[in-house]
Amino acid sequence: MAFAPSKGAKHRRKEKGGLILASLLDMMNVILLFLLKVMGSSGAIMRPSPYVALPAAIREAEPEKSLSILVNPQGIFEDMEKNPRMLSSSEEVADPNNVVLPGLEAFLTEQKEFSEHLGRKFKGVVTIQCDKEISYDWLLKVINTCGQTEYATIDFVVIKKETT
Image (cartoon, rainbow, N blue to C red; front, side, top):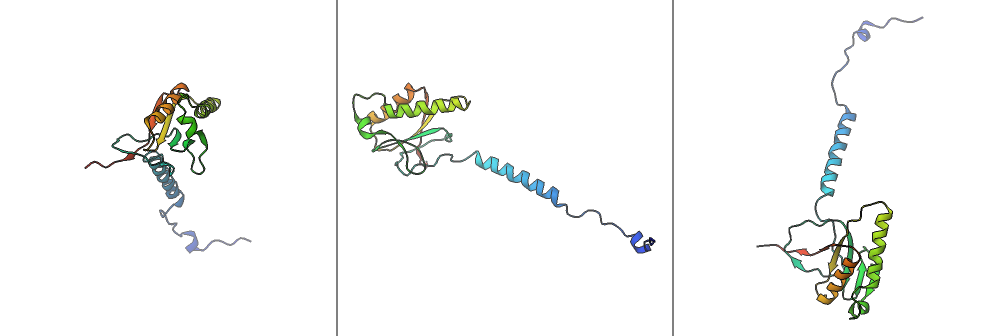
């Protein structure tokens, strides 16, 4: 046998309003994603390598993420966080008969083919982190090799000098 509800339970007021956590969490997620997108797309994208001493210069352009190589007195390296892979030795670069550096050329061609294999459009952009003690002849050989492998846009990484 069912009992009839009491008069107090029958006319109890339901509270309206209050804090709805689901909507608040959704809003916080949207704000967090917006801030991550904004902060992730601006600022220094490239960290200077500890293996080179970069020159100082006044530059206004922001760096772009692209294929990066290191040039220091020991040779030319693939830019990696730890244990950079040598692409061309200092003897190979110093040889006056080498106008195009074979190790660097093979690496750049491999990267171009890999990019095309993934279905990405090949942009032909390379970023060079060059030690400030490197001679112009070395740098010219690196630039020539990049040009021969269809990397037409060459950017250099520098330390931003403050203007006073």
